[in-house]
Length: 180
Image 1 (cartoon, one colour):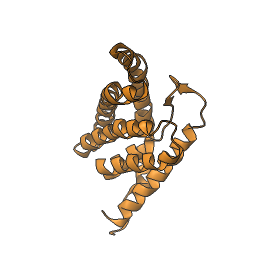
Image 2 (cartoon, one colour):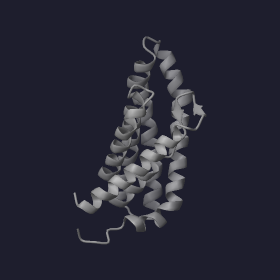
Image 3 (cartoon, helix red, strand yellow):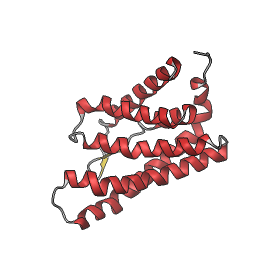
């Protein structure tokens, strides 16, 4: 990786971590544990500008930086990384082959759908059983279908809209202006 790209990933990761920390101070949490934050926005911007691997690195670094203040025993950060890693990977790979407005819309829609599916599977089979040990499967499915799925779909839609209306202006900041 070029030094320029590493620097941009680091800067986006720092912005994402700040946004994630800021979300901790929002008193309202969906279901008591789902943060309403936009800390994935820098990863999406990085993905569109530099590719899916850049977005995954932003997600990874953001979650590592959040570990010292976790209140979830690292489960929340793992879930965040898995679910949002799928989100940026999907967006990045789809957009890579169709870098148009239409391609961006398709990438963001499919990214949201795949992220929501990843949240269903991750929460049902890994995260909720770690938090709610020994509960019947119906409790897990009820939580996933009535709380986690709509939340992640709505969050993906909001992030997609913010990205769609701001990426063109922000990509100028991430354009490679040197040959480093």
